Length: 114
View 1 (cartoon, rainbow, N blue to C red):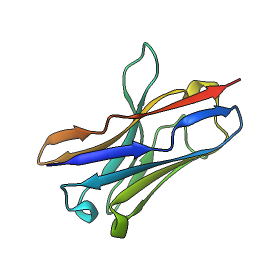
View 2 (cartoon, one colour):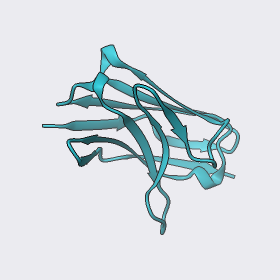
View 3 (spheres, rainbow, N blue to C red):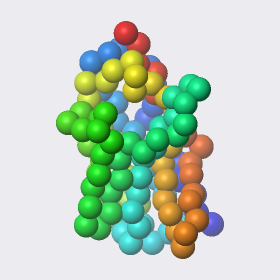
């Protein structure tokens, strides 16, 4: 079965950096688009970044600050987050869509203090 395991969250001051990782299993990793989403307290889950074989897209709010990358040999996707802001606080989830079904990890909490 598909499993996604996120890591790398934590508490950081505004202006700081974090790198999130998501290890995937149960899929042909190189053939699937992988995404990072986040959910802030009291808000809906939103797309942060997504990377596929021919495209990489970012939410406007993170462009220039976050970078999504993947290492197919390790079945891992990363999210490098720089210049973090308090509004980046939330639970970050890894996502893959396989045959029309969304799969999610349990998430990793990122807290940015002002």
